[in-house]
Amino acid sequence: MADAFDMLDDTFDDAPPAARAERETVPEGNHAFTIKAAEIADGRLSVTLVHEDARYYWVKANPPTTAKSFATIAGSLARVLGMTGGQFRDAILDGGDGVVGRRVGARIWHKAGDRGGLFANVGEFHQPEPEAAPAKPAAKPAARTATKKADAATRPPEDDIPF
Image (cartoon, rainbow, N blue to C red; front, side, top):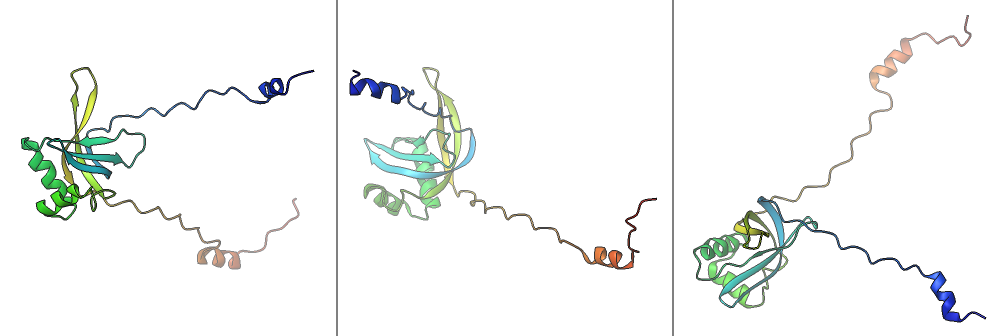
């Protein structure tokens, strides 16, 4: 007599786990993102950006607060969000309230890493392109135009008997 657990072996497939989708580095140029997280810690501004296209890796803008690029990146982000520098700093220090979840545009540039990786960097923030409105379906052509109606009225009836 077969054990109850032996029967279970025949009923379940040992399917391999679903493969994780391979992501790509965001190409250089202007892209729209949503801010996932923002903080100032360990002397760095750290803003995590999620691209609208899920096939791309997240991008991190994390300049040190002492770097020349800090003023460009933080200032451009504050302008895009409609905040002054002080309001932006306060929003970041309050855990990102008013910043997280907002849609922004960013200019991305690449740099090769020391170990061969490719890194997407934020050059500056800008207003994102407006979201495209959904395309309207094409209008159906008229079943019979006025010209077709007039032609049908003046045309003699066709003869169904072939000779």
